[in-house]
Amino acid sequence: MDANNIQDVVNSTMFGTTGVWFLIGAALVFFMQCGFAMVETGFTRAKNAGNIIMKNLMDFCIGTVMFILIGFGLLCGENAFFGIIGMPDLQIFTNFADFPWHNFVFNLVFCATAATIVSGAMAERTKFISYCVYSAVISAVIYPVEAHWTWGGGFLAQMGFHDFAGSNCIHMVGGICALIGAAMLGPRIGKFSKRTGKPHAIPGHNLTIGALGVFILWLGWHGFNGAAATSIPDLGSIFLTTTVAPAVATVVCMIFTWIKYGKPDVSMCLNASLAGLVAITAPCDVTDCAGAAVIGAVAGLLVVFGVWLLDYVLKIDDPVGAVAVHMMNGIWG
Image 1 (cartoon, rainbow, N blue to C red):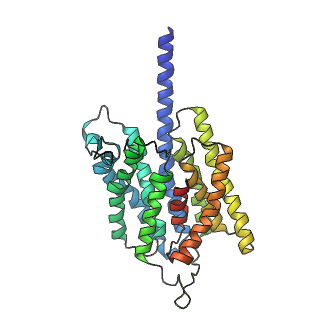
Image 2 (image 1 turned 120 degrees about the vertical axis):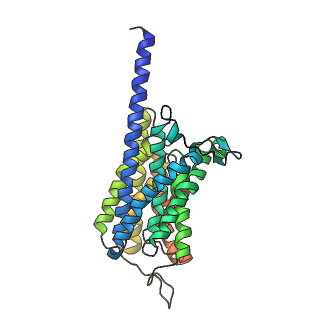
Image 3 (image 1 turned 60 degrees about the horizontal axis):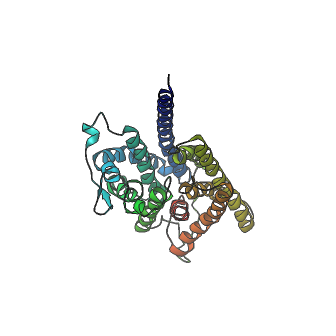
């Protein structure tokens, strides 16, 4: 075997290994749907558990249908209207030989993640049929159009904007939708005092399930951030930053809440872990350990500020802290 043949074999093996890891990453991101469902169910009251589980299930199922029909084309299609949208097509039904199946599956699970972020902020007061309509709209139009700007070769990509795994494209956008939805719905009965306007805590019914959801999300985030890595050193670096940032965020949040409230706040620390993960998602491939620590430290404080801002200033009821975690730390990321 000559040198050229050896190089071809090496390249083929590397391509195959990268493709397999890409799909494993997609599977890990899909498993994050379970994590979101557990977090939202645990942080809310028991009477709403069935509604929340059903909404998380239908996020993915309705989103898949809409992403097949129109979303994937708007995201990955050829640029149109100065890079604002891609051109939809139905090649998934016709181009069996050359269609990028792995790319479709990976973008589909990312789309489902963007959609499910909103569920927690609108929990306990959303009609199921209304949520199904929202899920269809964000999967078909909102996420694919804005993600095309960065990941589909749109105008932000042409300007050099960098978002490796979705602090902006997924978490900030999902968080903004969550903020709008929660503001439109209004607070749950009993959340704010009629006399003073001060917020009252409405504890979730199962902190254990909520914590399990956070650990599942942390596990899945290694696929979320690392699936697009093209080499072992890059993957190792991404895994490092994806571990350091949420760990530091949680420690900082624990210390801050311990000082402020006299004891660590468990649910706030769980949200701080997610906040650190959200914040590191965009720069996970270009920052080092020290940078990840700084990003995580800010995220750990920002999530506490975000919850305070919604409760005491904006008077918006967000049962699981989705806006503070995803929107604010998506912007920070």
